[in-house]
Image (cartoon, rainbow, N blue to C red; front, side, top):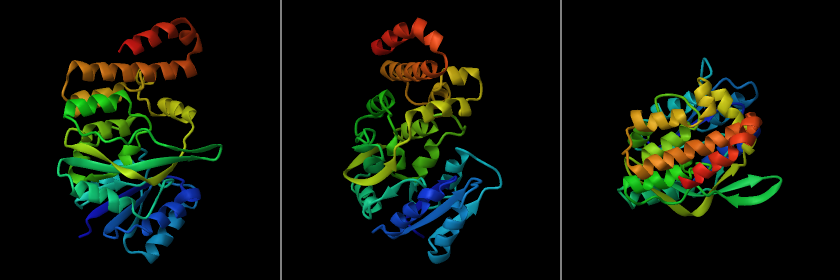
Length: 286
């Protein structure tokens, strides 16, 4: 039985998939199995994935009969039967020692539930920059949740190596905008996070306006559009039942207000021009 499962949820990743798979094959930590789950791609994603699986038995390809969207992440995680698990997006890539160093960090700390290296964002228009979201969280559960919720940022920490059992318990049951923030926050109920002090992972920069558009795509109703983190908040409070303390509630309120401001600035400029100053002032007070 391999020690690590790699789950790769795919959707139209033909442009970057060879780079991603080549970098996984080059890992110095060889003891893994990889499930490549295609979510109805219309490009050459499946052909490329099957080509790799043909030559490397560690890679298995699954084609979903219908589009799962965020549920594809849940699918690859639930399919894992190993001690450790790694989400591997089809547009990211890794230095050869990424997995080895993350596993080494987890082996050295029984209290840690996840480990991720420093992450470099690559953008053709700008110089590479380090992600701000991978810092170690090694305090109490309350301290870690408060720190994380106040600034989840790009959430690159989700793409580290996790203990599979804890990752499954942390993954939300519902699909919603910022499900990845829900996941990372919930893992902190089961242990701490470690940042490996080497830049071993690379991600392409996603333009900020794209995330705002995802709000409308993912919202189940008007309330979820206007308050984009409301579903995430409900999942953390009622499904995951995170410890409720005043500073945690303040952190959630500030995060929700920030997301609300981001949305109305884009889609409701008149409301923003009339009330933006007040909303911003309230947010900073939180």
